[in-house]
Length: 132
Image 1 (cartoon, one colour):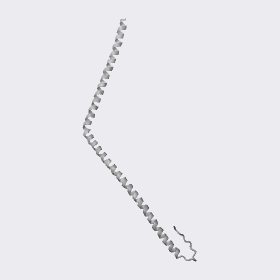
Image 2 (cartoon, helix red, strand yellow; image 1 turned 90 degrees about the vertical axis):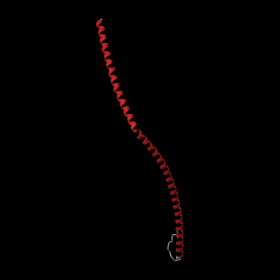
Image 3 (cartoon, rainbow, N blue to C red; image 1 turned 30 degrees about the vertical axis):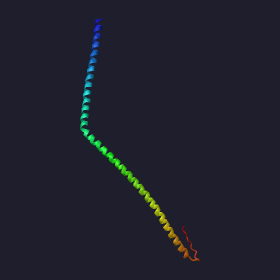
């Protein structure tokens, strides 16, 4: 019976020794992880401290670019309106010019047809096309 108790004590001791060794290895891994994360945190903080003035300059640049963009948008809208008005004016003047040139050509055609009909002899067999 004693041998059974000794055997159980040896098995239990070996299991607890193995568990303690695993906990110790886990503690080493966690310590190394904490050191790595702390190193990354310090590197990030030092990087941000150095870049903080640059970020402020960049933010100011973005703000001024936004203002310039808004001004350019307003100017572009004005130019679009101006071009639209010019286009309407040109089409209006073009239609007026076409009407006046058609009227002038019709009056010239009417005058030439009156002359040709007046000089036409009654015995000629020429076909004359009249334009309206």
